[in-house]
Image (cartoon, rainbow, N blue to C red; front, side, top):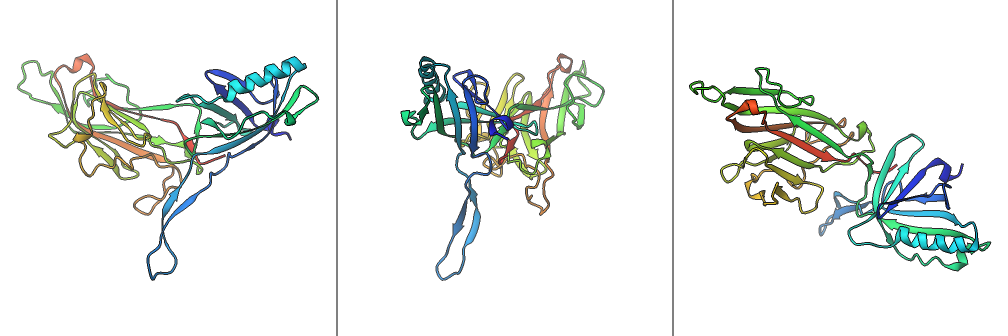
Length: 335
């Protein structure tokens, strides 16, 4: 079976879609680089010792090799096709090409890439005056393939007296109480060491899933919020410097996929100074199925995320309650 009939490939460049599967000018013949990327073990050797100490591994960005045939209807159309190929693969700044693969098992994965190496469209690869054998290498800055759909998981809270203010996304909350029974209108609520949790299944439970470093947002009003992955035993605690106070309408965002791990509020203000020293900013992640956990067990792909904090609500009837969001793509080591 021809690869082009088995795997469907869509190329999106500058918001324009092109198909490499016999729809139009192009017929895909082969793809390289969809499996595991080349792995480098990180090793340490000491004088007068035999062997080495294995410290883990490093994965480079993914390189994909595409081979396809481009065909024009006439000699003039062939030259129009060459111009289109240049449009498809031309380098741009901070504007990568997106490759989307639809597999025979109906899974759809994607990656953002840029052209690497030569793409001179040598006329020696042209035959019958209007057909060209195209070979092109592209590279992603990430080793993983992502699901095509971005996910947003909301972990919300409701008080235990029946207020239905915020959606309860498979969550559990305990610890609500009246802040001061002596208040004249009894409208103050206090979230005292409250706990609301959600279970997140990543990459559909696939054992080929990759660790996920999401974008996390915790919305106010709350004081000293803490978000914990109880599965990996990793936490991010905003309890330093007297504790982070978030007003209603503000949030703290942690972009854990970004190598610099920025921690900012809605206005871009740096909030990393509120993180406790024992926070796992560098390592906090969602564990895929099969990952070896800190207690010697293995993840089944379910991650139990808990949010704790302290929050005061002067007017709970307005429906302003704290909540957290995790924004991410399911990731795969390869397909």
